[in-house]
Length: 168
Image (cartoon, rainbow, N blue to C red; front, top):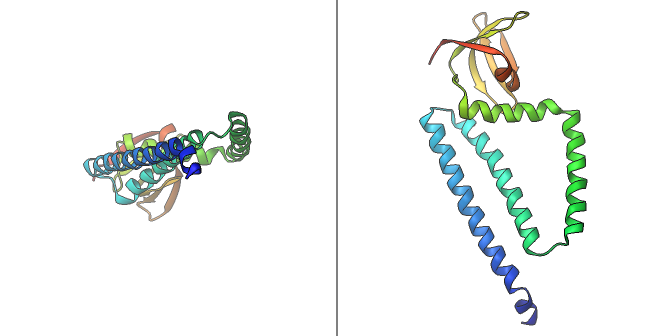
């Protein structure tokens, strides 16, 4: 019973934090679903963005609970900097992965084109006109009129000029 009394503040704060993060996750996912339906995005795109946002909320929840239970700041700082160093090296080695994930989220929320649209990518060296088949987290699948399948990294959708030829 003494142990319970000693940690009552942390137990209550942890329960409150968990409730807050569960409600936050529910609200954010509801907003994303409504936005996806209103903008007529596919279910797979909506699920993908929800998954990324869920990871972010989980990370915040873990950091909050760690701080509630009083992990020493020096220990937490050492752990976080070690993890961030490893992640930084991995992202530096694969920077395009991070930029494509970010571009995928940006394309989800602000893109004027949708699955089914035919687009023209204005590129001097390799102009492309193709129909959007699917938009994934890292890349967009296109199909040309000749039947060629093209995989285009999402970050190129933000870097290149794109004209919508047909709007579905």
